[in-house]
Length: 112
Length: 115
Image (cartoon, rainbow over all chains, first blue to last red; front, side, top):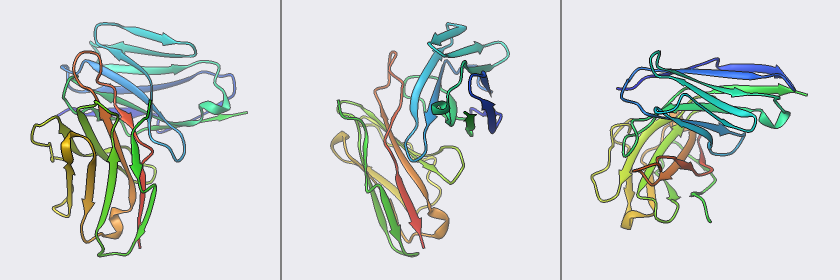
């Protein structure tokens, strides 16, 4: 089955700095890669996703890049703010009715 | 519109008791997932319902865990004879798979504490 590795497990940055979280996956058939943000006491919420037919996607301060050959994808947050502090999860899926596989999460701490 | 809702939000029970956790998915979503999240850990898949198909129970950790989905909507996760290691947050998600709609929408979770 699919295996998703996520690094780092904890990331501490100063407000205004950039943050990068990286994930690797094992199943070359995976074609959908969402990123979720989980704030304390809440369920994960989708913040951005990318499909295997594109290499990069941006949404304001958030971007995701995908390297299909190397089977890795990354989340980039620029100009970090304290409200970006949360746990971030990556996932890989073959789409449709396939069950996504999640990474173990990255705890991002943005210091004001 | 309304998102995924779960109840209760918190549940404290004694070891050996049975508990039922409820999930109301987004209306029209055909897929429903249950996950378990232990403190500081990732998401552990438990069970998946898709339409009228037989559920994928491959993630259930033991036969003490079971789930139903009635009428293709509301789902109940039941844990029998609870153990302390069952203490965790139980998350439900729904989606409308197919095309470009594989996004999972999560509920707020039920925090279960087994004493």
